[in-house]
Image (cartoon, rainbow over all chains, first blue to last red; front, side, top):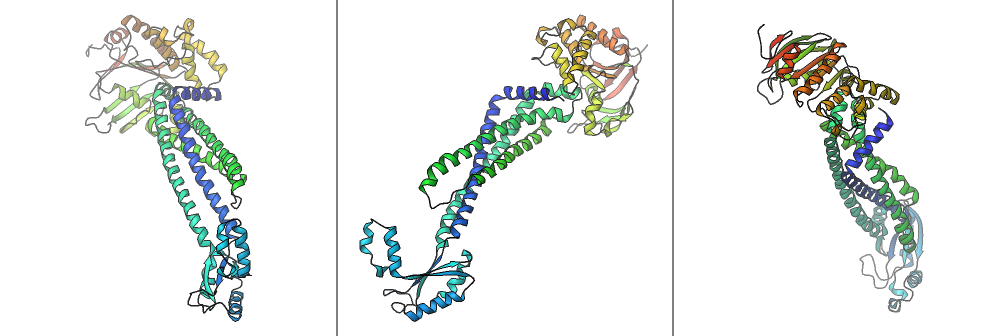
Length: 301
Length: 230
């Protein structure tokens, strides 16, 4: 079997089967784009988790004059405050750092955050509770801190910032599952399309293959042109999907999202480039797999 | 060279066997007409020889090889020891005469130099050296069958199987094809030809194997189509 012969056969096959080949390229490109999007979304969520979980804290709000919690009897006393701090100190190493924020500090931050907003006029420093902000070794250890503090006198409430984040991550995870489901459906469509393309191609060339068989061409040289034909389509489709994903990184994430959403760490180029080989592997892999199965059925040895 | 020892072939979902206890010996250099009505088992017999099908029971040996036990990956090499021509010629319409014959060599990986040397010789053997750049559609039926025979001969097979090679040809053209087959036979090639063509069989006076309902009902040296006796 000579290279030039195989190349010519593949060329002929694609020309003869042009519309099917184009359909196959588009299907591979679309399904791989979805696979890529799902993979990138997962990388994005991981990256945000790593970044934000590192920053989040547990806030322990202390009783003020207007607090109604059963652990409160008016504003917290100095003694109670010292006790809360002691309890927090005893929770090391789960509790790694403890910051105290007075009502004035909280008001200062609030002023910064809502500078220029009318809401500032209605808030006085008294309305913002003083608090301890605590950094944990692992955000998952929130329950330990909560159970140790929830019945301590002078503690009004304990807030886990991770809960707020997790709700957000759940939405992202839902989107990711949806992308994966659509990607799987598209991959399935791609497999069917490969099978149909190969079948049409094998039928169009049944005379060639029957001659090849009768003069004793090996199975591989009979099947290789068909497999390569599908592989060429898969490689073109994978390239288009890759181009789409790189374009999305460059024009959507880097040019639009990143400058405006500075508090979100976006996926890096290294992470994007890492999925490119995966796309090619999936694209070419399922195509060759589907083509081989079909040939087994339609080109009997 | 070829030996059918009690060979039967039963296709799935059919009640009666396509081949029923066939016993047949064919020596190297023989010329055998395989005659009988459609469905009598001629094609099945050829398919077994090509290992397109495998016998249900019995042993078929070709050149000392038990065909049923041949491994799949050895089948291509096995087929290179035989050539086959069909009633419908099976030429590739988009390729010239030269390229049609060359195709048979390209697909088994023969080098270009060998193709360039051998194809003209094969075309000369079948008397088409003048028409090597014509397309099949520009040739008569008889010429097309000659091209197919040249292609069947690319591997210089010891055995040539012909499945009704004159079935689509007029009597005068058929005679030419038979002369060519006879020539190929005289250089030592075993020829097995399935046919309905009474005139040709009677004219050639070769060995006749007649089949009916999957059985061999006559095996006669120098026979004639319609005559079972001397």
